[in-house]
Length: 77
Image 1: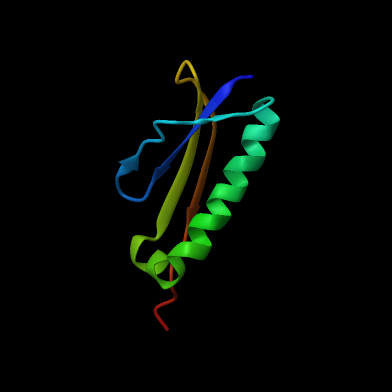
Image 2: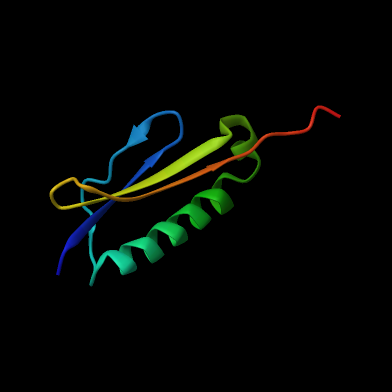
C-alpha cells in the first residue's frame, strides 16, 4: 500500500514524518478533508488569529498529491 504524508501549515510548515498507508490517492484526498476539519474544530477561535491553514499531502516520493487551503477574514463592521 502506498504511504501518504499529511503536512500542515499555519504560518510555518509542520511536516508529517510518519505518514499513513492508504489504498490510493482518493483515500488520501478523503483523509486530507478530515484532517482539515479536525484542524478547524481544534483551533476554534484561534483560527481568526492565524486566518489560514493548509494541509499538503505528498506521496512517498514527496510528490504533492493534493493541497487544501482555508482562510478567513472578518468584517470591520
